[in-house]
Each structure stands twice: as structure tokens, then as C-alpha cells.
Length: 428
Image (cartoon, rainbow, N blue to C red):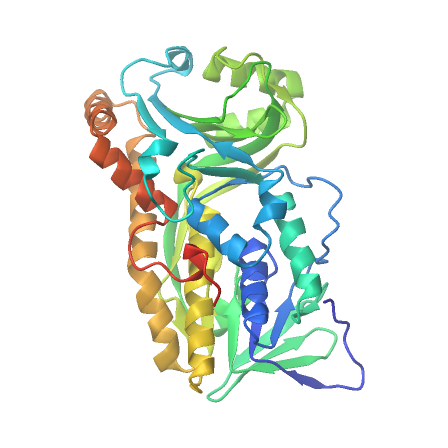
């Protein structure tokens, strides 16, 4: 429920304060509230469940484990009703814009739903690799569930400062209200105030690319196939959406991206068609376009005194693998389980001892994914002949090896390793 500031209450006490009401922060607040914790969710933007359609045009590839988590929280049905199943993923290495016209050419790698096998959440009768979900549809479902939960939402509300003490954390809002809790979670993205308050440094580097995002209507059926073309200036992904549309994630050089972003719709569509080819017919823009710089940013630690980080506040990566939101939802499942288990045992869930369990659980997976996406970005954003020959050989080798395909698919779906309960569809 949404809470306004109480002028007579100078301080409110909670079990956990979550800063940031994006999909990662909102899902964490919902999970904790449903498990009995007293949660405050703070965001500078209004948090409303009645979003009238898409606002920013972004969509995310949602893995089976992420959908399992939403299923355990009771929001999966509302999200899946408007999601598009990903039946296959086709990866092609293109040497030039025209190379994408040869879908069966050198370097092709294909993944199918059958590669998942018996992974948690996989439907043997109708296998799919995951779902494409428009972010605003997912937010609408999660916000509606939050409205019915015990979580208190302070939005729009700006955090003026966060003090991380020995026994408790205090968040001061600009309207004067103070929120206290044993733990504050930073889920506010790359520019995390909680991370700064915890004095956690970051490292990383910018890429010589800009990401262009848009939604297009397709003239021909996409059949649930996600296409990713690795072109010399960056990857181009055309991902299936409902109602015969596709989500476009297009990485380009800065100069080219600027020209594409500032040009008219007709020019944008023409350049897209030239790069993608005519497999799906001429693409037509159906919503706004957006552009954002691409960079790698990793926090040196996922926890600090009375603080924990999730999602992009902890690790922001290149969208080449489509794992950004899933990575954050993995953080949510692990942190929620650690907090709730410690709370039930009577432990101080904001202590260093408890928070280190979360850090250990997520450290290797987070670092490994960040390193892999960085390597893939560099490997597939060049047209050097030797590099191109090596990566084409690697793509063909994986394509021809069913065990390797299954390994990659199950790892991407979150089906491998010590998965938290929520990612297996189990309640906390």
C-alpha cells in the first residue's frame, strides 16, 4: 500500500527498507512482505499498478527461474497472459549489414526449448526457453500485488541521506520523515545512494557503443524466435513480443547511434531492415525510441554495514546476453531467503555475519556473468579475420553438440547450481 508522510511521526521502524521500486526492488519488497517482514519501499517516482500501456518501450527476456519466482509470489499469471514465449534463439555472425540475409550461413547457433530438459518450470508439452515481457506489464502486475500486501510504499519520495549505524540503518526523506531498520537495500540502479552511503566503490569501463531500444511491428510471423546478429559495430537483437511485434535492442557505435536516434522513423526503419534482412518483412516502429550509453559497472562488494545491494546497484552489464533483469531477480531470491531465514531464527539479519551469506551465494555467479558478457561484447564487436574465424568455429561447435547446448541453456535459465527457493517456485 502507498504511504504518505505522517507529519506527527518523525521516525518509523521497519524490518527492511528497500530503496528503488523498479522491478528488482519491487519484487524484493513483495517477497519480504509476503513472508511476514515489515517492509518500506521508497522511490522518487510514483509507484502505481494502473500503468496505461508502455511508457519506455523496454522489454526483458525472462528465464524460467525468474518466472518461477513471480509464480511463487502470485504475479506470474498476470505477466504470462501478455508475454510471448521464446521458442528458439538463433545466433548469427554477420560480417556486414547484408550478411544477416543468410540465416543459415556460417556461425549459426540455435537453441530450442527442448534443450531445457526437465529444468524447474519447463513444460514438457510446450517447451520454451523463456518469455519476452514488456517491463511495464511486469511492473503493473508486481505493483498491483504490492498494493494488496503489507508493504508500505513511500513514493514519490526522495531520499536525502542514509546513515548506516552499528545497530540500525536510518533513511531520511526530503520531507523530514525518518525510516529506521536493521537493513537497507540499494535497488536504485547504477547511481545508488545506498551504495555510496556504504562506501562501496565500483569499477568498470564504458563501451564504445550506445544501446537503441524500440518496439516494431513485423510483416511476417516471428514464430517465437529470438534473433541475435553479431555485427562489427555491436549486436542486434530482435526479440518476439505478443501481437506480432518485436522488441529491438540494437548496439551501435556512438556516432551511428546518434544519427539513428535523431533521424526520422523512416530512416530508422530502413537502416534496421538493411541490417536484419527481409526474413520478417519490413519493420514498422510502433512506439518511442530510446538510447542509452553502454558500460560495465561492478560494485567491489555486494554488502556493507547494514546495507545490501541488488540488481544494477551491484552489477550493471552489457545487454548482449539479455540477463540484466534476471541477474537482479536472482539477487532478490537469494537475499530474501537469507533475510527471512535469519529473521525466523532470531538472528540480526542486518549484521555482517548474515549479510555475508548473501554475498557468498551471489558473488561467483555475478562475477562470472559480468566477465562473460564483457568477453562476448569484445569478441563479437569486431570484424578482425582471425577473431571472426575463431568465434564462428566456436558457434558451430556448440551448435553441433547437444550436451553443450543443454548446458548453456540450463545455466542461462537459472536451473543449475544451488538455486534459492523462490527461483524453484517455492514460497519462503
